[in-house]
Image 1: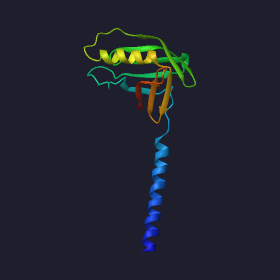
Image 2 (image 1 turned 30 degrees about the vertical axis):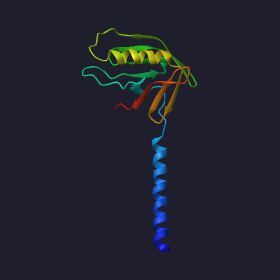
Image 3 (image 1 turned 120 degrees about the vertical axis):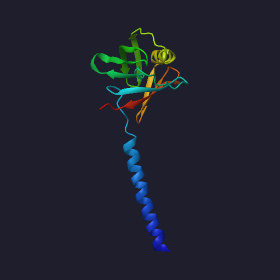
Image 4 (image 1 turned 90 degrees about the vertical axis):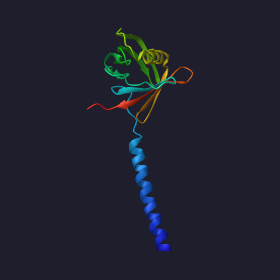
Length: 145
C-alpha cells in the first residue's frame, strides 16, 4: 500500500510540474508595439465579423509612433504616445467609406481609443483603460504568417 501511495504521489508531482511549466510558457506577455491586436470587446459589445470587411484591429509601429489598422469598416491611421503604462492616441484619421454593417463597432472602437489612458497586457490579451481605470476595450494578439 505504501508503495502504491509513493508511486501515485510521485506521478502527481510529475504532472503538477509539467502543468506549471506549461502555464509559465503560456503566460508569456506579447509586446505592445509591432503586434497585430484584434478587437475582441469594446465597452460591453463583442464585435462580429462582417463579410467583405476587415476585422477591427490595430498595430502600433515604432517608427514615428504610428498606429495603423481597421475599424471594422474603415482604415485607421494616426499617432500614439507611449510612456510606461500611459498610452494616448491621436490625432487619428479614418477613411470615410459607407458600410452597411459595423458602424456601431467603428464608433465604439474610435471612442475607446480616444478615451484610452493606460494599457495592460496579460498573456495574449491587451486591455485599454480610461483615466478612471475602467476597461474600454480588449484585444487579442494575432500572429500573422
